[in-house]
Image (cartoon, rainbow, N blue to C red):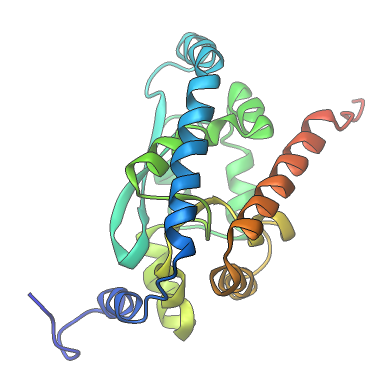
Length: 225
């Protein structure tokens, strides 16, 4: 059923605009092929490490093993995004109302000991490769956002619907160029730059920048306390 402009919600209107204004390009098929090839390869290669992480996780933190959060995907479709759980049980309910700088501060107090290591190594993000294989996400693209935040940002930023033209990603321009403290409008500018200029070369460049960033975090000397 097609909703009329008078009856559809703002989120539904933005989802419709993303479908009607979809900038379909030949390169999108190549990017999807890269998504599937890379995600399947990494999951296979990382399987022994993931088994060890799972055993240690269940022994130290118990269940649930995964965080399953609702996110807004391409054309406004809602999906469950998977991550290794890095926070204490029920942290989502306590952190739900917050985002930006305040969310960063409150999240820090909820991170488990194993979760801190998983975040530093980015291993907590590996289960999202299953989302990539399923077609919920891409490896490179705007980070997926919670439905409640999407509703708020859709009212504040009229061009926010343009993010929905492509699949959300594990990493992107905003993540390689900025921190978590920048505004959503600032991050959106980088997301839209990637959407406008997306290509195989840019996709691979962002992957390389992400790998270099993660490697630098892992090899950075820790301060003595």
